[in-house]
Image (cartoon, rainbow, N blue to C red; front, side, top):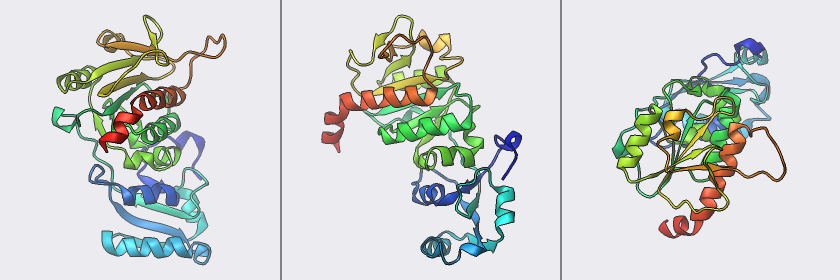
Length: 261
């Protein structure tokens, strides 16, 4: 396993079947490809089902499967929950957002300022589960550490449609597409539990240390806050805030979302 200081280095190695299966299930929104898969040779019997699945996929997708030692796998792995299976992949292209990319009457999130790839991955897991149609990221983001992010997101990062844009450009494009802009914040805010926010919505979420830039807050239609259950001067992690906000907005729009499907 890699040392702590190496963990956030660029990596396109996906670890374990959850991340690998998510990539294999991804639609045209993800152009990442598997080049080869390493499997711990001592797990031929215990991982027989997984090996059969990956072998069939290798014929479809054109990647190789190699059996190697647990020691070699450990040298390349960032975590220790890979189950003896690694996928060496190409980088994923995150296209720049265009107004034509924005689907009508949906829910998108702009995610900026998240401090580490684990928190970023946890946020993506929640956003995907809450039915968010796509995530827009600033050009400087954690998708270069895709192995960590995929593991933290339980594969959701490979399934989620993603785009990149500077914050003000993203807001302008979503306004052009007829979206309301919500920013998570405290000053001049309304409670997300006490107001209604119908789709189409772009929700802007910032990191817990820096928050959202003032230029974006000034462009919001509403600044929304999460009310706490007791006096608490701290802030939630970006992943926790993303979870609460996304699921509350999803809950408010659940009936119209399900009837549209």
